[in-house]
Image 1: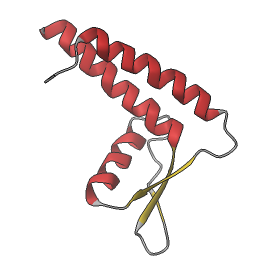
Image 2: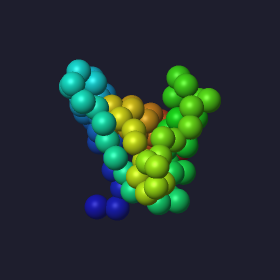
Image 3: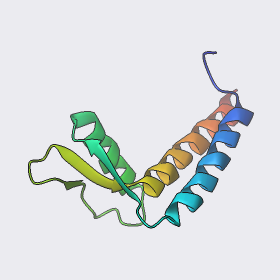
Length: 92
């Protein structure tokens, strides 16, 4: 399988939305990522697309770990998947 269909992408987006809502109700939403260049850039893009675009990635004191929340990543990935599905809808 090389690509997801438009329908599959919208289903993935729906599942991410449900998971985000569920995870958002957990007592702890903490998630850590290795502070690689790629992960830092991902988090910067996620923050820029959020309701708080002025925020900065939160790093550990030794700058080896990024602290974030699971639901925020899910919401961002959902937006990316929806954009991809709409692009597929418009461009085949």
